[in-house]
Length: 404
Image 1: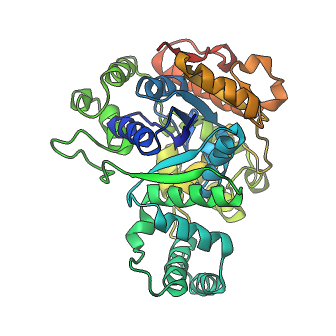
Image 2: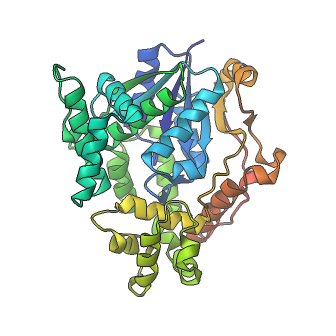
Image 3: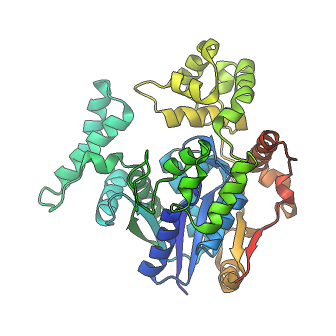
């Protein structure tokens, strides 16, 4: 049995994601594809546009065999922690042979080399990083220059060079962190990469069957569902259209009043207890409250040269969700859904996994998943108010099971 893992957000699912699942199966000759997917919140520090069970269904209908949830504190963390949390899940399953990720580059060699540099942190890397930070460069810029220097210094006869474009591409950045996490864990899982079907994050390419999730979200939020028919699988289009008609899309601005209420009650010390909130950002946040208009507007207002917009988004979201600096990760692996013909995979996981699989949250002690339960129930509440529907408790939502 060959099992290949994919780490994803599917925010929302589109043709490029279906292509990756298909190519991953072909490249690795996989019998089963396991997805580790962000839940109701994503890495850029915002709620997912649609809830996780529906996104899991979309993945299962497009070739995935099992979908597991990435806990919220990892799903809304930096690229490094996002990767570490997700890779640890694949490792703990005990049955995964390959990790396949999409990238702008499409070849695995530079990912392996860069991961080695970052894990070793040679002197040439540390010296340039330190000097650039002293000059006033932002950490991302200093890190990029240090990495380019180390890459060229350690093997001057390399046939290919590393470009700043490589290190700026978001999927390449995540790919490096996936490989790095595998090496740190001493994992036997083999990394491989599939070239992205679209490198255009901001527009729809005329006549193309592929677009980024960013571009698809923009179409959905602007009500242009008619432009989606060539960009997403047919069943996904039906689900997305239904969400649009029923006002079920969720954005960070749906949390604006809640965020303002929380910030008005907090001191700087209280804010720094939340994940990703530095002392300087906490002070700047509270000093700027008179400029607050909405979640997205305020995050943009707080952005500086030295702190990215996504870092600010994550900090503000962590305050809303009450995610503290201290780690509280569920001691189990939560299933969101599976295909019935993946029963042999589930049997093997049950025998080999370092953490038990959980299908029903209600069967586990509350203290083991309280952080994730609160985050999801808040999402359901916000979505219900927006759609004028009724909210539900996360523990009452059944597994998504797709018949063969």
